[in-house]
Image (tube, rainbow, N blue to C red; front, side, top):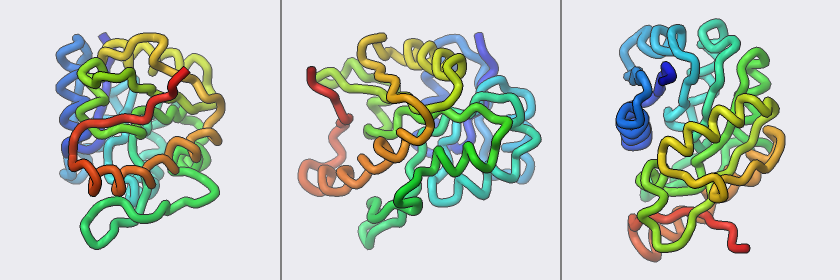
Length: 198
């Protein structure tokens, strides 16, 4: 059992929080109430960023003290929205939200994962007819191992998880968000994920 704080109580955050609680973890969800994110992060071992990516950097940089020595699992994508509300362009081209977070929070171990799929797949990967892939990006091997174990608790088999390397690799997985609006416009909100076929 691990104490986990989920920042963001929308579809992504709520889905992750419920699944992690079912797996036996002690989960706190921080809403937008003033001070809620700081209180949740202060007492957690692992903090999950499920806030809208466009504002994540400012929100989390303000929690630098609370996030010191914590694992920050970043599942967000920082994009501008198109006229239909779907992602349009990357906010950090040539970089990534995860890299920006790691730079702003040098005493926090940032791990990027679960950002290459629609949110239902994050906690139910086996429901897809084809095997999805969850990617890990981060500088700290122990932090990535801890996150790998969390993914296992969410139903990810070990050989479905691919460690891409350092935090700089997150720019590749974050760029995959550019597929999403086109896929959704083509086939609707049917759950899907990026998968590496071998």
